[in-house]
Amino acid sequence: MHMKWVRISALGLLLALFLIGCFQETHRDITLLWDTNPLGENVTHYNVYQGTDAEYGKIGETPETTYLVIGLEANTMYYFVVTAVNVVGESEYSNEVSYSWGI
Image: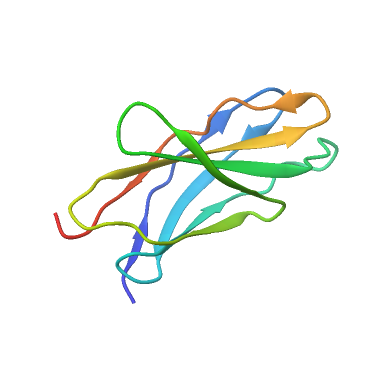
């Protein structure tokens, strides 16, 4: 299996989120990975966003620190960001991880 790691970080609304990168499952599927938030921030879940340009759309949420993205098309650059959510609200976007295949 091919692994593609990108190390990035971001700070948000009292929620420090470190998006580690992605692990290629198949050409069309990747798993995004990020560090958990420190204890005491009471994160309820993480929102995952995807885009192919400057605009992101929410593609899912998870209480875990991984997210499987499936069905990515060839010859397209995809961009991903993650936010953390607690009772205070949603953090700012993490920095971006990008992925493509067939380009």
